[in-house]
Image 1 (cartoon, rainbow, N blue to C red):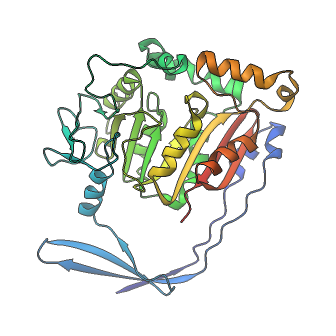
Image 2 (image 1 turned 90 degrees about the vertical axis):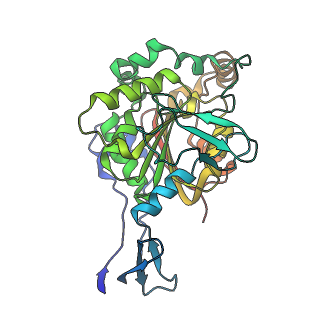
Length: 361
């Protein structure tokens, strides 16, 4: 038996963007440190002869009792069990037992035992939309959604499109955004994460290469964006394909079991969703208690808030394009609270905002 003793305190890193000369950074609300008490940890291994597997049990001197750390076999089972039918939300079962990864989806088949629907995987991704398999039925999507489904925009997204966010929206850039995101996700590192509306997989690939999560789900509604993500993965040497999978799905009808996901990230996506409330409510459903939601978007406040008829302009923009324009931090906080999430926090850099909220335990 081995005993480890350490102080498990954590203070949110504030210095990442405070080095910027942008004066709006000083308007950020101060972060409250989250402190955890010192405790002793005892580690012991147990085995089960019938299955020839082992489980690591971590014992603490707290009243919470021992914590079980899953071995690789259990993690693999957990990966497969998070998928659910987007119609009835019951678990999906593979017709042939296999691991959940980008290399295993080609030609794969999943079935729902409740509604009897079958879903398939193509060369690149799992097709898990509710309309999967429909040949003669289709629903018109908002202009913003259809725009990102076009081959041209999908091709340009990481080849100039995303870079303009820094110029007009104050986005710090993917690397700094990723560092900030990791700070919010510290409580759930080691779990699984959905990169919602992942686009061409810019952050999905960063999550996978960081190896901070057991499984990364790159999820988008655009087939062409997922194609770009797959091509980027194929082009990169020594990419860890075993812990990432590409899924086509509707953000308002997520194909995951309730309370099965540790984290959801949505980079520059909130404003593109046809119904942010429906989407965040779905995210809240799939998050486990204590799970974390992190998202970035932009807010038209400051001088923009004095524009006459701003709400009318916003409403007309939404009806035409399907995009949603946020005009205050309180609006984003209310969105999270209405979806059952708590502990709302945000950071700002000009119009750019990163928010985080948690599923109550």
